[in-house]
Each structure stands twice: as structure tokens, then as C-alpha cells.
Amino acid sequence: MSTIVKPLLRNRPMTEQDLSAVMAIESRAYPVPWTTGIMRDCLRVGYHCWVYEQDWELVGYAVMSAAMDVGEAHILNLCVRPESQGVGVGRRILEHMLDLVRESGCHLILLEARPSNPAAIRLYRSAGFEQIGRRKAYYPLPDGREDALVFALDVSGSID
Image 1 (tube, rainbow, N blue to C red):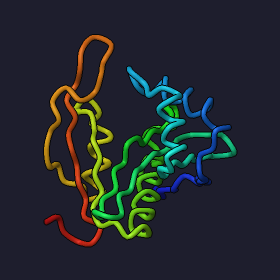
Image 2: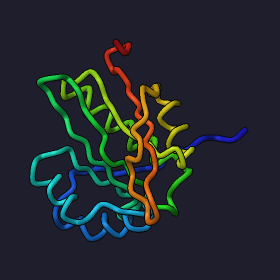
Image 3: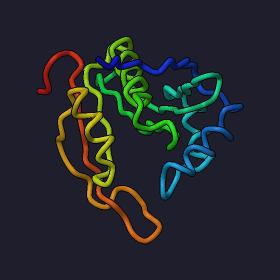
Image 4: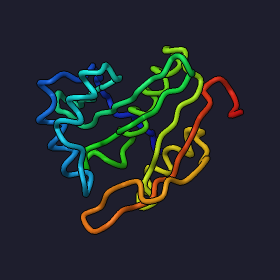
């Protein structure tokens, strides 16, 4: 009988000092990564920016905005370094983001996923997210653009 072991992750708010490590992962994970300026702006405006460490090494991060006045949160970036993918790190990061949404008082969480990322789509669907739309030509690619699948989860129980 096999036992599923959840990866032991330490999470903490992202700081400016984390940006070089975050950007190293970002540039390896995406064909057109966010810039340091975009990440720095997310910190500056007070988005929920978190890093996740395993054995004191950065393995992932997440950035989320929350609009309390409308009760919505939006996961803007959830990334796991390539060599740590497929072992539950992304699921743990997503669980933490969902906890933050619930604590914030928001009831709806949105995110986008690339159709070319079936692992992310499986993760989001297994967490209860439902596809609610598609954004044409949303993600930049080195030689064009890729659509985004839009997902939503109502953490209060059901999507209206």
C-alpha cells in the first residue's frame, strides 16, 4: 500500500529580496515570463504575494489580487519550478491561496490557465474550479499568442 506524502512547504510573504529567485523560476517556467517590474509592482500595490520553500529553497510562488468591495479574488500567477512539478507542490500553493480568499471575505476566485498546460487544468478542476470562459489571444508567446481558459470557484458553495 502506497502512502501519499504531502510536500512539507514553508510559506511566507514575498519580499523584494525574493525577486531574483522568483524571476529565475518565472523565466524557466514560462515562454514569455513576467518582468521584474511587474512582480515589483504587485508587491508595491499590496497584492497577496507569497513564496513557498522546501528545505529552505524556493520552489514556487503565487500572486493574487483581492477586491473586497466586490468579493472577488484573482490568482494572477501560481508557479512551481519545473523540477518540483508533479509532486503536489502546486496543490499545496493553491490550497493556501484558497485559504487566503476565505479569510479575506471574498467569495469568488478567478484564474486563467493556458490550454497547453493540462496539468494546471487538472489541478484547478480537481479543486472544484469550473471553466466559465475563454480569453482569445490572452497569453503572449515568442511567435504569437495563446488563448486563456477562465476558471472560477465560489468558495461560499456555488457559482451564481
